Image 1 (cartoon, rainbow, N blue to C red):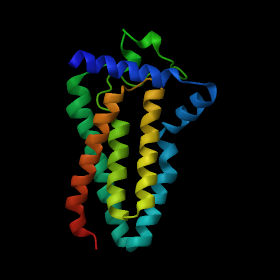
Image 2: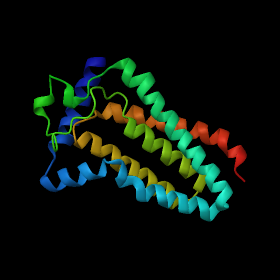
Image 3: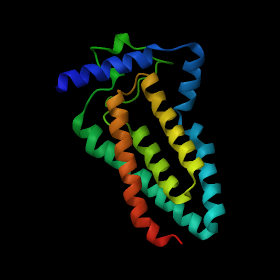
Image 4: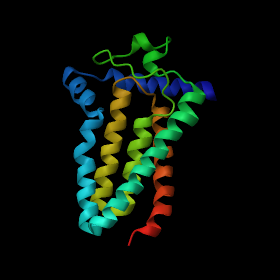
Length: 184
């Protein structure tokens, strides 16, 4: 069973990674960078400020930052450094089948995706704080797009992304549960 899941994971990754072009190489390489999400982060702050005012927005930012920090810490300390699953770009069995962009290979281990964990912690927490359907839709689509870049670039398997998204969503939800007691 595990072998068939791993085979499916590889096939799906190779299909996503194999559908490439010079335009998408540039686009997804830029989109995977942290700075590309800064406008989304700023928009979240604006929406929180409009809803809560300055004091509650600062508290909301602390809640969101805590969710991201916890998701990132768990993704690295409890998964990447424990499971030690090679990223596709470092896996000797398939690295030569991948289309790598700008020689980017990421760190050695990829399970779970910290990008996915962090983006979904951000998305879930801000969605629960802002409470607007349009924001929730937008921020979740943004997170999915950022996650897609990781597979397109060949640095994460779909399972890395999936588990990272679950981890980040869970961290975001539980931090929000605790933090909402302090938000009016």
